[in-house]
Length: 339
Image 1 (tube, rainbow, N blue to C red):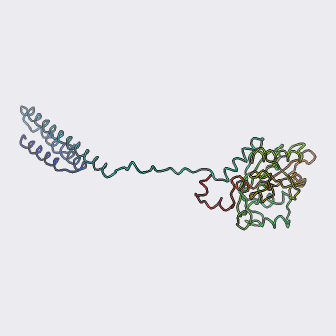
Image 2 (tube, rainbow, N blue to C red; image 1 turned 180 degrees about the horizontal axis):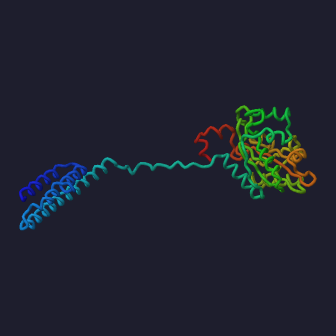
Image 3 (tube, rainbow, N blue to C red; image 1 turned 30 degrees about the vertical axis):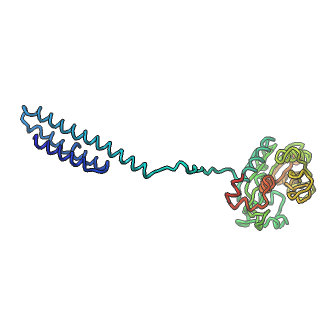
């Protein structure tokens, strides 16, 4: 028994001293000291040893185990140190290199403009209401006083899903849904994407965004419309901004107007941005047409209201002095990261 233990010890130490990796070292530990290892098998044979010899044999087994474990531990420390040194050599860090920059995104110019518009109107007590982009022809046209064969339909050259469903050409359809609900008074803006079959150029796109507003209450007049939009222009373009209303025609408002703002770049003196005019067209507006009230079931003797529509891209182009609308949709990071 003593000779066998000596042989196991010598063989274990020889194998330990010849390994190069921690994996091999662990295999040796299992082979000699594991549950089914050689030293464990010797202990299982203690029942065959004479009772008077068992203390001596047990002592030799323990000494053998301790010797193997000690050499294993020393070898493990040496191999771990070598492995760490090799890793450090392979993973050299050049501290003189510039740090990697984290590419953090930010809001699109359209989103920045929309958030500012929403903030202004919410501050005036308006609510933001959204609706479907795929809309019934009735809500997109007829309920807004644009019947079949109306010239306004030809101007918008609409994308049709079928003869009754269209991709909305204006977010005014959202206003019709709100009017039909009958919860008055009403102060709302309806931002969203709209579609028209326009040629792509510096100022047009078949897909763009609008923010349309609607106010319905008792005693609403054109003076309320002018005061509201004048305050909006001052908040958006600066406190010195002036507004001018020009008569116009929209099927769903009567009377109707287009609103210009004094050029915030030159203060109205005339420059490249305002094309020397001193004024910039910014939105369309007017008092809600009586026929629109009638189709939505609103009492015209009790309520009046006004509506307006703003092209969001136009706001972004003006506010950030962008010359070409196409830049907003090309996803060129060299352009977008400027904002």
